[in-house]
Image (cartoon, rainbow, N blue to C red; front, side, top):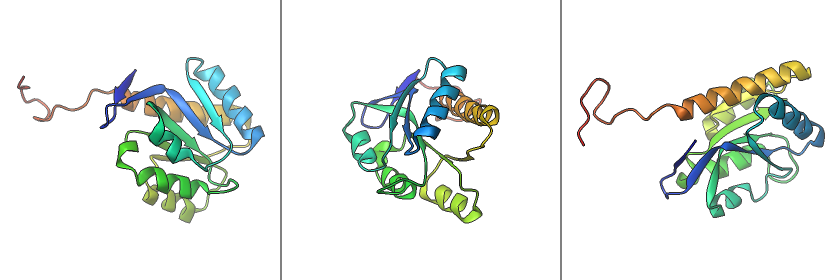
Length: 158
């Protein structure tokens, strides 16, 4: 269920890198996704520092990065901007998953290249539902075949 990026590295859509400094939130994410998506491979880091470099050095890329904004060291905004500054990481889906609802924050994240911005609900059932919906959406999007370069309805040339 993966595909290759422009450098030929595989993108594993079953692998999610979670960048979250709150142990409580990381545990909630793990519990929620283990219930709704038990086949996902979750990897956690509690710091934004070095995330882009780690992705650049990896033989395989996660299909999705779930990114908190408020962390010690480089903020989620900085991590987001750094990842998006590297064209070879363009295939990685970046979902900002945070407690901030400020419209300026949302706009800044999309402007920096976030694929989605999701507010963390306090209620665990809603938290799980929101997270499940986001993961399902991005997995379905990535599972769609690429449109034919000739355009829809055009015969493909081999």
